[in-house]
Image: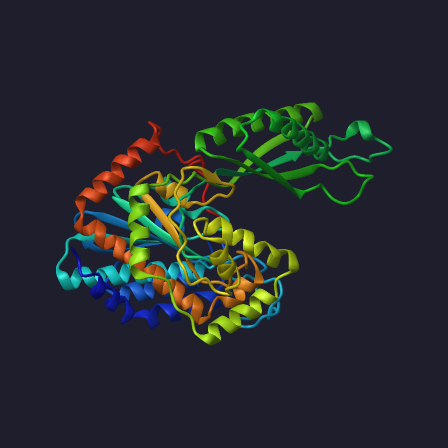
Length: 478
């Protein structure tokens, strides 16, 4: 078996590189596909570390693949680095304060995600080089997870073909396996065009696009009664045709999200929604156009890889925190509203379901979780979506989380942004890099593990094949 202690030593020797990388990406706070500075920072590190870089993958200027080694197995490591719009926040303080209101901020930890995954790729590269191990490591620089589904475009272009496994992680509030599926999701704009007219003097000359949009929504709301229980359909108006009631609205647009546990189920619901939109256009004498924004597949879980990740998480152990880190985390917990604070014990009980009431009370009182959640794995989908799903339909895939943020905080909050350059985040991304690298080492040295993971992967496909629903002519938009 491999020398895991040596692998950890190699990662420890470069941990400052990746802490600084996280901080730089946090400062850039770029969104969707416009990620030049963040991608440049990552590629700069990989070039210095001897990786071959392919940029502009799948028609995305700031998507890239960094490759080291040759031969099998081929292990993919997913990295993200996109921020969230409107979440600018001053770092390291326990109050909501923006330097540039309305500008982006890293409210979901993707600066740490990208840096931690990079630490894993470099760490296992260094070990392979030192020990003369064969195999290939591919780091995928994936734009637009938050909005745009960059991995779907990578999958459409065949970028994940030929992988033997895929590993990734996400910064969260606890150290836990992400042994759950997610919902497949289509995101589509429906726009209607009509004809304006004076709404009082010549209403017969008008054709209301807003009426069409409203009728579409009414139809979809009736459809909800006749779709599977796990499906979710959401919409928002992106154009209501203006603010003058005495003008028949000549334009209207809706953005729809359609979710279900399997992509094939989303496709079926989508086709019914399209029929409703066509009907709304017919009823109002308007025209209807469809414009795709993005789509992502459901995550196909893999228990073989999940067990390997969890085993290495246990072997490595949780992080220890300084008094200063705990004190800062407590100030952020104290900043939460009362309902969020009251929800902490219940969240702790769900996560640490195997603990006694006494232990749960202690965990709930901790500002930072320094424990590992019990093993939990299911193929059931949580009510959320991720483009990791598109990679998971090409090779066995597994994910986990590490504790990077104070207990009780939530993703997409100012508290998460404030924590983004802290030492506790640096510890969390370092821990994640080690867990991924250790699992990659298991895969490099244990062909049977890959065989078993692939057998499970084939079973979970259930005879289906991956199909990217985004039309070939649709390209990523900034």
